[in-house]
Amino acid sequence: MVTEFGLRLAISLTQIGAVMCIVVITVLILTLAERKVLGWMQDRMGPMEVGPYGILQPFADAIKLFFKEDIVPAGANKFIFTMAPILCLIPTFIGFAVIPWGPNWTFEINGISVKPFVISDINIGILYILAFASLAAYGIILGGWASNSKYSLLGGLRSAAQVISYELNVGLAIVGVLILAGSLSLVKITDAQAGWFWNWYIFALPAPQIFAFVVYVISVVAETNRVPFDLPEAESELVAGFFTEYSGLRFAFFFLAEYANMVLVSCVASALFLGGWHGPYPGTLMELVGLSSWSWIESTMWFAVKTYSLLFLFFWLRATLPRLRYDQLMRFGWKVMLPIALANIVVTAIAVYIYQQIN
Amino acid sequence: MSHLFFGYFAVMIVATSILVVALKNPVYSALSLLVMFFHVAGLFVTLHAEFLAAVQIIVYAGAILVLYLFVVMILNVKQDDRYHSQWRIAGFVCVPLLIEAMVLLSGGAGSRATGTRAAHAPSAEAIAPDNTLAIGQTLFSTYLFPFEVASLVLLVAMIGAIVLAKREIGEPDSASPMVHPKGAE
Image 1 (cartoon, each protein chain N blue to C red):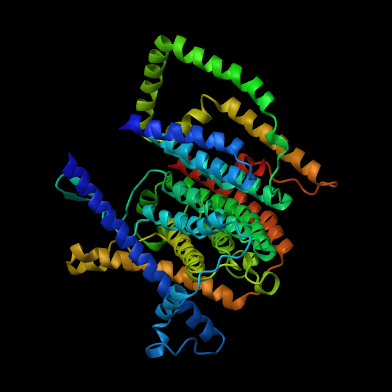
Image 2 (cartoon, chains in turn red, orange):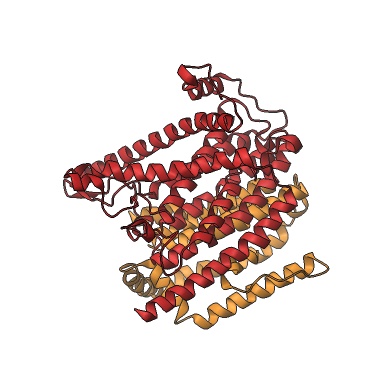
């Protein structure tokens, strides 16, 4: 009994450690990739100094942030000032627990069934992610308040309003997929999209979720406070918004949370709309060659390709679009995105109902 | 094991609820309310109602409480001592309630045992297929009418908020039940 519990714990901790490593490495790659991609789009080279072709720049950044002086401004609420970056980081990392990275396999180790490519397949997977994503606003709003600075406070308040407005659109955009899949579990939703690429929910037949996908992508860009929706940290108006007063490791936490959040929403988008770890063809090429035990590499690579393509979209938007004004942001969220998301739910529900009556 | 979890959640809920009204800094009050919502969600998880737990966090912690914090910060309420000298009123309300609870707990011991047994039976049945499915089916068959009435009440509240906030009413939002939970806050 105790050994079984211990084994289960060890397996879970191994999975959590592996996923954390992958996410942190992805964030390191992203910080470099963002500067490189922006550089190329603006006809520059990007960082070139550290290491060959600048590829060691993320490590230089990390070491620099680690050794910077940790300043707590006078008059700041020290407890909340310290808690805010952690409150920002935890919900983001917790969300990765239900993301299926690869095939839905089950192993038996000493009578314990283990799913190697998902830490926990709970039956409310996507709701769990939404629940914790909604908590990320606390880190931002409390960080802004505790800094005892007007720029931080304004940034935090803007962010709270923005995150709440666009969270609603994220939630409504995925309802269409939930109607099609009939499940909240990300594993089940991904499994239902097997086969050719037209089975992915962005193209799937009774009701293609292409509008929902567009609404989702725009809303998550706003929810992660990225350009063109980076009002909470608008440099020209608010210095740096809610993390104006943060330095050193605490700033690094906010930074890490923002990038990990980008990775999380991209993973969710590829699992919900783009077929997750399924390739655009049925089965895998590895199985055709006869190496079916290695097919997980191909599947996880497809997942990575989809996720990284979406992350590239974030950089592309940043290089292309100027920042919105605050009233434009709110009007766009409530008067354009919300009606589209609601109409998508109505159309999907009717289409699925008719489809079920015909079959 | 489950008793241990229940004890932990119950103690934390009581303690943080007291802190919500006892703390002088409104931001700390809001934070202890956040901790309380989490432990209520934890109670739902121990009862195998994961859907309710997630909805609890999304609606209360993710939306309503953020708006509370928003208002507290916009009004910049530093420390409000007005409401901390009302011990007499608080005692007048709470002592009868406490006595009532004591009487119920001690006198209703026999009925409580049967009550818990009755409450356990359907929950064990409900978790078997899918908790979310069970809630959806119950809500849209047995309790369809109360559900629709609740959504209508929320719609009225939303329209009321718009009327209060704005002199001239723009185009009203399309009336789908999905907007109500967040739109009415």
